[in-house]
Length: 251
Image 1 (cartoon, one colour):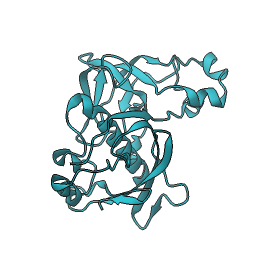
Image 2 (cartoon, rainbow, N blue to C red):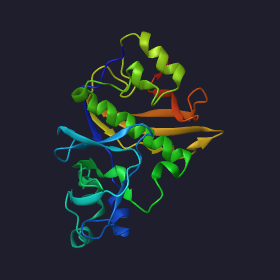
Image 3 (cartoon, helix red, strand yellow):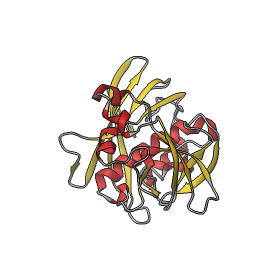
Image 4 (tube, helix red, strand yellow):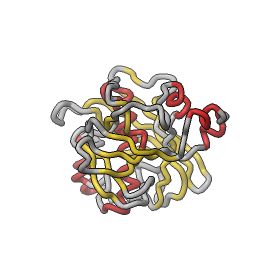
């Protein structure tokens, strides 16, 4: 089995400048929120505190609606936002929000990147490229969580959520080696937010997503190739190839 990620420090940029422009900041957001960017059939973890190091205390459905925002960190009011430079905005840590379910039966901290106003169009419905980008985000988030929950997205019983079915089957007999998500056997560094290929994100049905990875001070770009998998119900967008410097997965 491929090596698991030892320490996966996710650096998912929150695009806070557009949030300011849309007035989706503390004290100025909508009355209700919904979950977006989570793979259908999967769930969004709600935690005791604002970070993946905190214990999971509940889950929200991939399309749950009517969520109530209690507060978010880091604090970002209109006055604070107006005084930040672009560099200061870029340096802000990932944003987390304390949310309550519509019926008040559940509450917990969730990553703000999975929240949109309840009356907005879900991100995963916007276009195939955005759906592919969110799938890669979910893949790395699941890998980061694996050390605490025990289940890894490269496990054969989980892999079909992210990869072509035929690739998921091969993981049962995959020999030990470099982790296809980081391109290395040992990892200690940063994984940036997935972005569409700048020149041609989609060509003849194939979607290309880039992920910048820094490991032990060395940087490279992982290239993900995706397209609909007709062998799975509904032909969902799935990964069929990951390319690193000098090698690719599947080999």
